Length: 377
Ligand SMILES: CC(C)(COP(=O)(O)OP(=O)(O)OC[C@H]1O[C@@H](n2cnc3c(N)ncnc32)[C@H](O)[C@@H]1OP(=O)(O)O)[C@@H](O)C(=O)NCCC(=O)NCCS
Image 1 (spheres, rainbow, N blue to C red):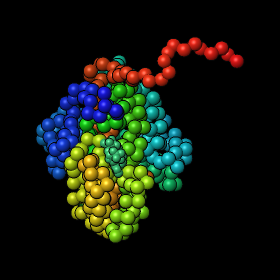
Image 2: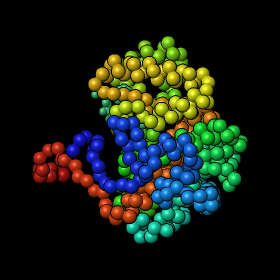
Image 3: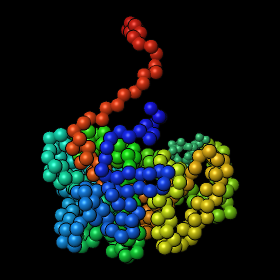
Image 4: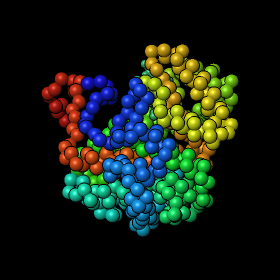
């Protein structure tokens, strides 16, 4: 087996796939970037969870109505939030989300997936997706000494998220930019956090347990923890003419350039291409710097790692777009969770249907057993 299970297909799925050599990925039968061009996040949510886009305006309204009613934070969890916000102050809202969703699953009596039917499972999954932005925004605001903002049922998922974070009604342009970012990151093949969610779901544990585990996997810098680091790199570079020396120094110290390279893509990441376009529509000095630094980084990486095709990944412009839309840096990875929880939940449902535990094995390479157990001294 290749290290890290790279390229190993561990299950069949109808949710989507990534074709790394072509630079293409899809949600069910549709190109994910086509969906991000023309559809709302709630449409894509329905596609992932229920298997189809809403057929008409009334189906769309019915789904919107159903999911918007599930946004409120329940009282037992609301009471915990000040304590959670203080406890995670240094770590940030993603750690707080992990704790709060764990409490929510328990307080709302989520039962093991093994024991529930499709309807109850779907209800639990919609609840987890709908409440995630509310929890992230509330923890963020409380940790900054602000009152949480109640969800607005008139606003769609992305605009409502911005509203709950900032407390002001978002302009349509940044709201759509964030919505497109969220659509682009809903799902992405068998990535580490999705695999984690499926492993936990495969044991028959409850849906909240599977999402909480996935959040842990997402938090790592090799997965979802890169966008703020990519922006930190842009800050450290500061001016385009400083980029080349900065990058060469970093690589010679054995560092990785955050926002570049990908486990699957061997050509341009299609999410990066679209996010660059969105960033350029938003405009600004930071965007101009990012475009120049991307070009310099590609040239430097091609020079120093000629055997590995390395391109910018989704994280490089994700931070730039979120920054231009007013989201603070500590909210970048939590915002990734706002969308990816939809992909996790679709995968949890699919895994639960399979009723098959994922239980691989490891090759033992330690001292030859059995050795005599030394006597107690
Ligand atoms: C995403 C990532 C983990 C994929 O890893 P991977 O496919 O396993 O790539 P590998 O670890 O096999 O790396 C292949 C080679 O390219 C180099 N490389 C990969 N990404 C690099 C980067 N961002 N900067 C510099 N070198 C990089 C590796 O050092 C390795 O070189 P070597 O063989 O000389 O040691 C990796 O590219 C990375 O760490 N990127 C930075 C973090 C990031 O942006 N994460 C968000 C992912 S969406």
